[in-house]
Image (tube, rainbow, N blue to C red; front, side, top):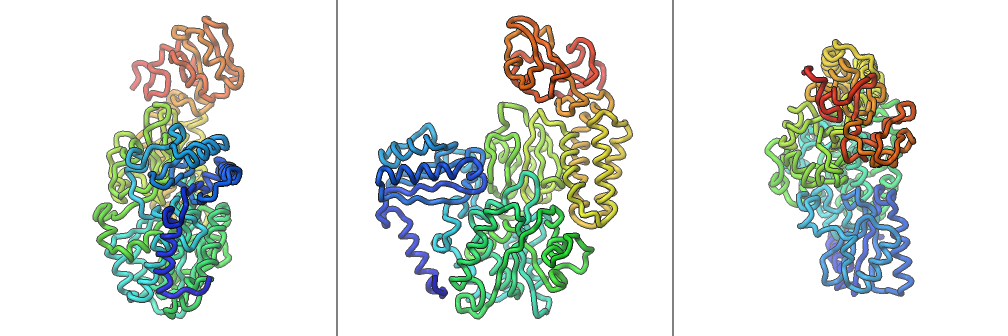
Length: 638
């Protein structure tokens, strides 16, 4: 592609809007196979092969075959969208080769929707209906490897406006007035960060993007980089104009190969078209951009550690001040924004700050992308207005808890976040309200847990992660998280002491108060919130050597209540370790030496005869009140 000028953007925009419209292009249909990492892992490549094979076999010439990023509903992948002339788009889910062959025969050729495989229409499906797509405006709707398609969807219009019609001060004012806060976790006002850097005089400044997404269960930034890389680049161009930077880096973890591939392709296309590099759009503004691959250290999500890693040094945070806006990468003024933050810049510049503030609250404006995972029916990528209640996200968008189980908690903010119980599900999702619960919004991880979850084990799981990822520079984090982990391990293995709970609370608060960076300052959150809301589980582990959820193996025995067992054989057939014996219509028994504590028998029994008891329990299961996953203790004990 030749170097573009301002007027070329509008021409390409109109040309491609016509070219990709079915009627004007003379096409009968367009079929898009969604091929983000989640789709590919679920088998999207074989679905694409089946589609192209059927189109070729039937000699169909008037169909566009396209690929795109994640469609959002990751738990239903592989997904394909069929757009037939004169019909509303139809999304098909849980696809395989045979299903795609039937869709080609009946829908694309025959014109009849295959209802058995189709998702409800957007307005009829709460998962899509309750979302507001701004960051995800292009995700799943365009070919991420096509610069022309991005331009057709208003791409680079904002960059052109910022470079030709706005001063640095005007760009910053729009972002400040919008109320956009950094979506990487801290929630610092983006416009204010840009303003600080813009006022520093320096011959060199850097505009940086943090794509080092490391939270377990989080995939927001990865999905945007895979499905809409140009929006990140455009946001960086505008940010570079605002602060006066001419060099930039996108820091991406090497474990994201598809994101890296598409980002590099987008950089190459933009450079070739004159949208990056020297004299962008003939405006006289220069901005050169490169990708830097991170090695997967969680601590490199912290801005000063990321910058040290970019310099080729060990990724370790440093004390602040000086702040990066004054002394950052190679001691030059630097601004670091995360992927989601940058993807929101272009539409704000085009539509204005009032448009952005039309959603959200006064202090938490706009929308937020969450990776909704765990025990919900609709696992996926969602974008919602700030201020929406947690309950709406989990039960309407998420479709409620799988298998009709009870909700127990939602972990927000990744491994450094906190667990929020059912009693707080009406909490609005804002920075202030979530912090008040003891959790954090963080970068957008939202892990839902059901009644089968051990909250002590959950705290231990996240502490294992943060203790392992601590860079070790400061003693409170390096030593403190290890002590917390050792105490949690003792509790889950039956060696806990009653005074441990208060020690965990005291030590956790000390680590928060004295750690150098955000990793240590938030690492105790899972411990503090689980004790705050689920203290009875800690007490049960310590006082009764009993994990009521049946997760901690040293503290659990699975036993069949002879008063309730009907001898139906469901548990025997379900057991993967052959640990259950018994004849039909006679009492079954569990061989404890063979039991692997997988809970399969518990799930399979329709008569609730499988009981989860203390590990050393001997006697009648009815002696324990509700010996299942309920939060009850021995009779007569509170």
